[in-house]
Length: 434
Image (cartoon, rainbow, N blue to C red):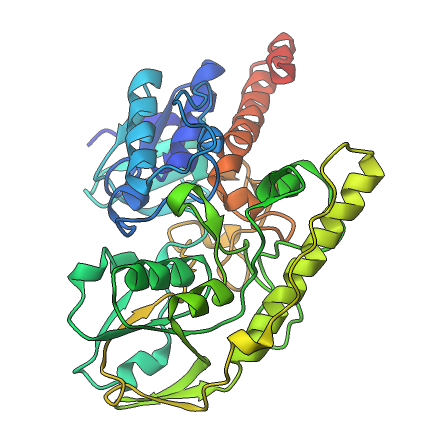
């Protein structure tokens, strides 16, 4: 069987992978995108029905395709992101091979069929493809993270990860416990409560912020201003780290609004402590609801102070600072160190415990001891290996859809640089300045 050669193979047909291929096409290069499912699989089929993107519609752009709708400050449903991505692929003529998983990527390549090949991709269908460049657009979170204690919970309790939650009506009758208070956990808890379900939320470390602040979106300030401090950490928040993890909790529902433990408490969601163990129908908790809420309020205050400082340093003309309501401990009650699921009629647990990265398809030499990619600003440790959709410099901001186009164009410029110098055509480097 003849081995196919492609200049650039992109693994992953989400917005990152398709945007890299589109950026390359704008520079005159052809890339092939290999997608395990459908274009935009995660947005189309692995999110709950009510989910809306957390950033404004104006940020949902792809290379050469700005937002062209009539509601730039609205928040589009997840399914619409997938639909727009499919339209982009069709209009840009991007070569996406759906339902074509990559089993492994080999490098270096012994006796390549093509002299320019630096990688060999082994596909699940048994075929092999050689490539000079590989772009791993797998995203940072590809496999559901579930704690080991799930195995110790009585089988009468339905358990599922957020990846498999669709809507309140799809769950068995009874109360629902959501474990984890990041974006997914709080949004799903609100979704269930708004549908009239009795909801418990087991809290965890997280950040919050107002949707808008001093005339702009907080996310705009984070993108546009250099702020002092590690305010959107990609790696903190575990163990004894004083740094809280992740992007601030917000909701794109109802035109975009704030979301926090206080908002959920006012809606009637019962807040309980962090889950630390399980036995049958009893969960063991850390009695920390008030402490978790206080930490989130502290981090929010630090973020807003950093924005204030940057605004002053740049001499920006913006509305005056609106006083932030002080932390109100009366909204939160420490629940105790146990939760009896049967006594509370909790029949379902939704685990909002995030995802774990899985880059095992890549060459071992490209990964660190923990199995994570070794890279700098999306350029891997092997020649010709690039990444799209990874955190950078301790910040998770590059994971937001608003950063997709910038990351894709940077990867494309790196591939263009390699190609023009290899073919001794430095005049073509001028395109990198456009």
